[in-house]
Amino acid sequence: MTRSKIVAIVTGAIAIILAIAYLLLVQILDFRGEMKPAPIGEAEQSVSTVTFYSTSS
Image (cartoon, rainbow, N blue to C red; front, side, top):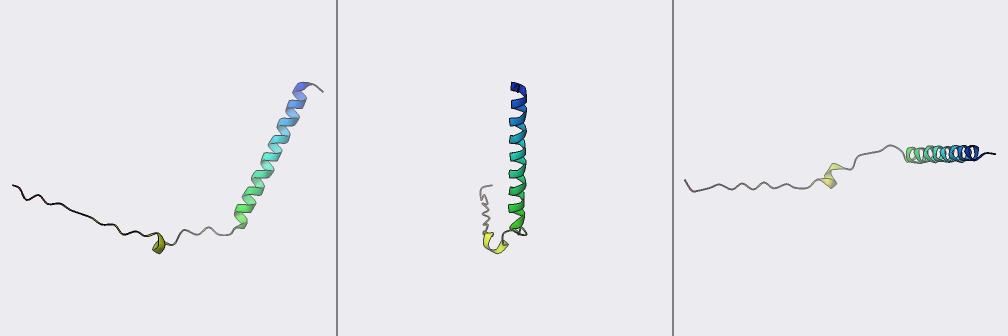
């Protein structure tokens, strides 16, 4: 076999391995169920507003 054929076969094998790994990752993430946002009550933080008034004329 020539060097270019070996490079093509190795590159194709790497591409197939990456594609299968991607599909497995998507299946695992999808298997976890519905994605729900974080509860607002626990993430809520109080915000204070301070206003300064100038008394000089």
